[in-house]
Structure formats: C-alpha cells, structure tokens
Length: 137
Image (tube, rainbow, N blue to C red; front, side, top):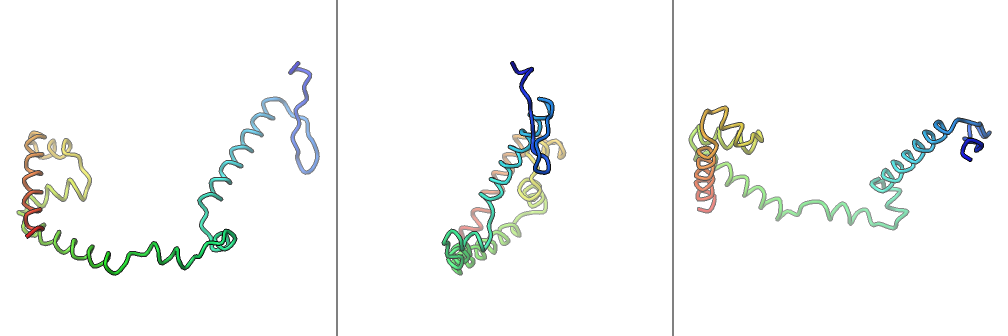
C-alpha cells in the first residue's frame, strides 16, 4: 500500500512530489526547527515579551540584584578568606590553589606531587581546618 502512496511537500506555494525518504527527512527537519523555535521562545527574555505577558520589568531587575547587605556580607567573607590564605605557607597555598582554583582532582595532584592520594587528602583537611580557625577568629 505504501508503494502507491504519493509523498509531497510544499515548495514556493506549490506541491512537489518527492520520494518517501525525502518526505520523512523534510518533516523531521521541520519538526526539529519547530522544537528549537519553541525552546527559543520559552527561554527568550525580551522587554516586549515581558510587556505582553504583563510582567513588571522594574520589579524583576531589582529582585535579582543583590542587596547592599548581601554585598557587604560577601565582601567580609572574601576579606576573611584572603586573611586565611595569607596565614598559609607557600606549599599549603599551592595545594589549595591547585585543588580549588585550578580545579585539579586530588588523584591528579597527588600524582604530580608524587605523594599518595590519602596523604594529600589529609593535608587538605588539615589546611582547611587551619583556614576555618582563622576565619572564625
């Protein structure tokens, strides 16, 4: 029955007969494009869309800005973190920097330093405890 079926697509406002494979490929791409457009619209942030949806844009802008208190707390935490980092030895600072700022895994860093991973883990815990004590004082 599918052998007698004719497959057509619309090209420049006229129907064109195509093979079954072309027909399915065309509609697959068309559905993919429709889905992408839906996602774009779903995550689109524009002033016009907000106005159409009745959203108060000024409220959204102020809602997502950190408050003065949040900024001050963050600044204080950063100040304490810098003091704690300054209290470390060069080797301790290097270990913390590689693990937390460069994102190296303990396994990789232990291999680079030529120490067992558990030894490195113990050093990390000791250093973090030392930093916590400086921050809490």
